[in-house]
Length: 212
Image 1 (cartoon, rainbow, N blue to C red):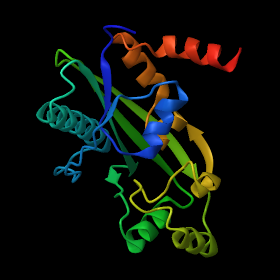
Image 2: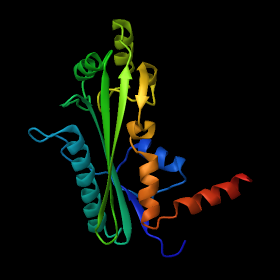
Image 3: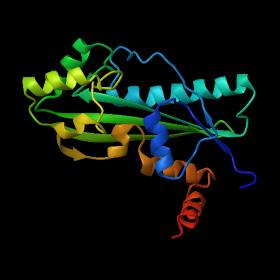
Image 4: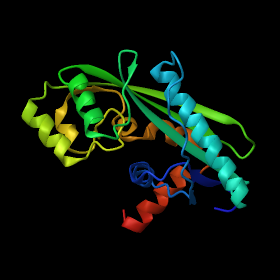
């Protein structure tokens, strides 16, 4: 569609790209935004998720402008934080960190906060914050050892990926599944449509192509 803004996804995550593709959206540009994700002193999980989404969006916008593109682009970024109470769980990089996360989550409820930021071509920032509550079953030592051996936990917030093996650990969920995976599709669709991105037009195209 002529005149519509391009879309920059501030991530190299195949999960977030697959979620966008699920709703018929194909970003014109992928611009990974690597930022310092260390929580500030006393920072609450929800504040961290939104701050990092903001920072990623701004970083990707700057990288695109320096590279000479994206002047008329929407920039979409998201960040996911897993927390038990006020305690923020890390993105597990070592087996020890992943083991600590699993033991913390076993048999307990926790919250997943996903912050979303959309920067418009005019520089305005639109925000959404989605909270999802999940309860894990009590994990046996055998289950934890097998999951750790799978290495699926690597670089995952809270040491797990709900769309993978760890989906079998969740006995209750209240909120957005797609937000836990990495991008809340309901909120993202609203944000994009509100800024003139043709999400629903793409659905009509998919319908035509599939012969529906």
